[in-house]
Image 1: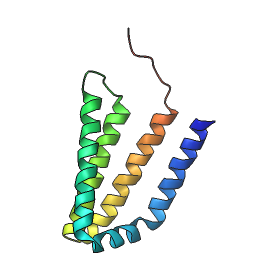
Image 2 (image 1 turned 120 degrees about the horizontal axis):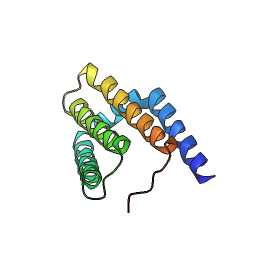
Image 3 (image 1 turned 135 degrees about the vertical axis):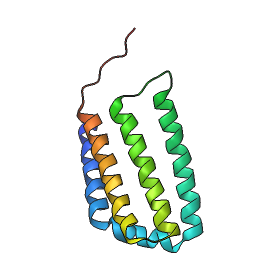
Length: 116
């Protein structure tokens, strides 16, 4: 049951980002300094998640790709906040949507126990 709730929550987040992502980026860009600090913190957290997935515990290919896509989304948001280019907002939204789609694929994929 909790897996279904998590999948539905991810779908709801994807729809919300798809519908209101551009206005969210516009509002975030108004608070440039705070946004850059928060984006830097998110990038550090995401890089730590990527390192953890590459390390001895080895994450799945989907989770590694998802981490890379979310890092790309953070970089694109950083570009939009610093230099509000028209292309960066759409690219950021697409990267977030793609990352959420990979997360959903990871939820649907069967879990394989690690070799012993």
